Image (cartoon, rainbow, N blue to C red; front, top):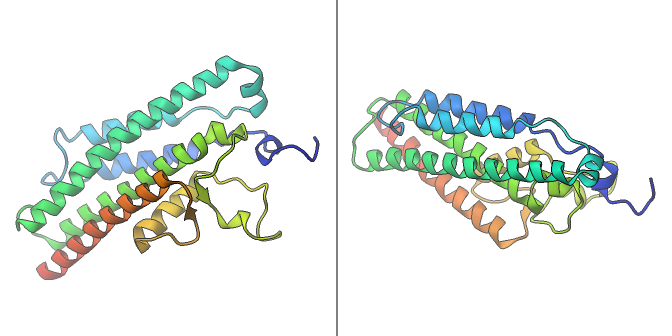
Length: 229
């Protein structure tokens, strides 16, 4: 091991997809429990898409050396990433439809008439929204987890660990799914970046869309629930 190695080269393992898989399964469970008036029909559609995504994500850990020495292994991981991106897109689309239906029903004074049901539906859509955008950030930042493990250049987000000196930070530090989930949660809750800064245009645009969706869901759902109470 030499001093010229990149942080990715020093970290020999490609990040596990276990945490991302658990998050997707949570999204599937929340989607299955949505009230019938809000859920996209057939009701099994969103849970089925989420479950398929979980299967696509559940890939055993692979060492960086295996990816470098075996092109077939690298090609397999890139195919599974493309499948994960397609499934994430479908999950995003169905959740946007669900959220739009919830907002439109509120504006038309239709649909859910109990505050508890309304808050549950709004919270579920919001949490799924956080998970979906965390998946987008995780899969797209620097080309995804495999590209990050191979040390490919470029940065889409600036994490605070890279900007401070040890023991609080390190240039060897690499984000994992939980870091993107935390980033997605804070962006959806604060409607703006907190400690993680977007650098690329697609990252800024994606964060802007997430904040706009979060504002619509939170403000309309909470206001209508308070009105019902």
